[in-house]
Image (cartoon, rainbow, N blue to C red; front, side, top):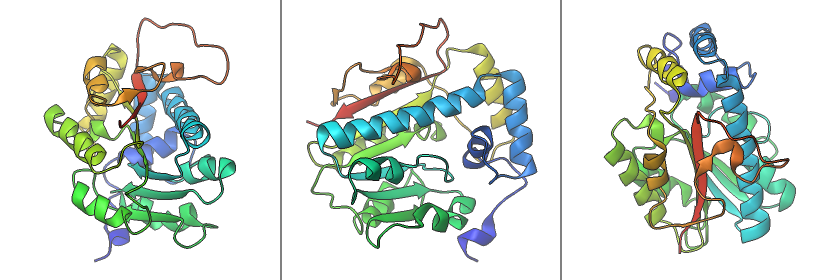
Length: 262
């Protein structure tokens, strides 16, 4: 049985719920029901999804224009949406190479959409789980030159690993496999907002893969050993915003950062 035939539409999946929150159509009733409950419990959830997509655009733009990175490994890429990693990168530097990774069979089914228009060897998709770095790194090496700097993108994927020590170990393993000059781009939800904690608790009771909120300090720890790009680990809207600096909030839903491997 191939991966596309194993799509489970009886339980919500994070990639499909995220797609719904971003206004996409590649989701099932169970995903929309979960998304609607998240929005009732935490009305800013859709905005959080949009903020993360904006962070992706800003971080990839920074790596391409200011550091010269020309290849990206996007783990937990999700379903195609506006401004995917390869689109952002290639607007600034045609020829950038990107490998997307996700474990949702529906993402595999739509990989042809994600890869449409890409020259052979420039963009690839791996159906794999973040918990299997050997398979992901081996697969990525068919498209990326892992002896040259890579932008490692991990957005809301560390939270898919319940144990913090395991999640931190996985991040370290991916970073260790990449050369000096590579960058980690990471954002994850944090447990500082009671409404968000309630919404995620409800989601986890029904989801195929639960999501773990962590403290801001725990997320900051994923960057240990890396040189943080200013402004460091901050609330996601505050990382180099395109417009005026967002007003400070007493309650933070997600934090992010970009760190360079020395």
